[in-house]
Length: 377
Ligand SMILES: *Cc1c(COP(=O)(O)O)cnc(C)c1O
Image 1: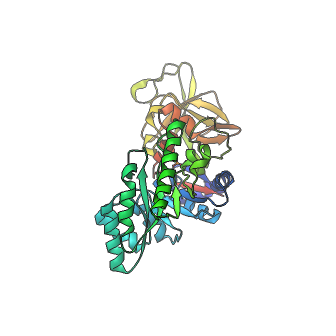
Image 2 (image 1 turned 90 degrees about the horizontal axis):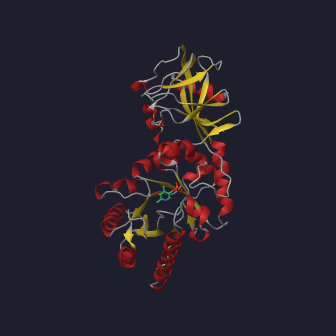
Image 3 (image 1 turned 30 degrees about the horizontal axis):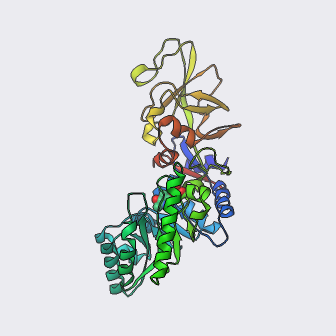
């Protein structure tokens, strides 16, 4: 397989994440099939594209026809610009006033929640003889960034007067689109109201947006001019039981670097909380919590070996995971899947998240930089 050749070039430790870019193609088309022709798509690729790798994913999505990219910080946006990404990039997070120069320098679009940042941006843009585009962030219930809903009109009117600043966008965010449809519908209603109140004051914002993946899938009335999917582009479901087909892009793989025949009654790993119950073979896998695989999956999560599920045995170490494989005839160098499929069996990021008491976002974002990403297309 092509992936193995690539991995050899990057490092010798046989642990890697495989990113299936064709799955991202499929998921992007699913987004396009749900939204109308007029609706623009901002691909949200913050946090190294949810652990899938910022640049390869950005390039793929640009090729697919994404209209906008969304990132968390100016650092992520600059990384894109330095690699010649020309597409509009919205910095979704707040930027401190002392760090605003790069926004003008790299032609970024900045989310704005208050007057101070807007006037600083206006000032720099004027000094440089340029224009800056901003998207006003409105808090309709997220309780994080954004101007409070009831203060939004006054703020927007004030910002509108600033020189060299273009209010290109107006947006809000859903805290519980997966769990509270009543509250989400209320947010959509008041956001609509704000848009029409602004119109009455003669202010029309060209790009209004609200929908994350769950908004996009579950609330067609939240699509407005642009949708902001992140998670679903990677083939991970924001909620169980959704009537939409997605293809997961992320697999996590390793190899058994050591196999050992052990007698019954032998403790495995720190704490000795797994004891062999018969003569058996224990496989030592070259991956651990140091790679971002959650330690609380010790004695809980399965891995795939030769197309079968085996439970992790004993505590997960920083660099190793042990698995009691019974009498399975595995060899040193045996390929093992921690996320992804082998034969017809699959372990999803969602499954690990559930066992680990977290969300799938944290599983994929958590797989560290020690794990090289290998791209399949
Ligand atoms: C992360 C994020 C998104 C994407 O959310 P998903 O649930 O991954 O689709 C959209 N908008 C904002 C403001 C975000 O922070």
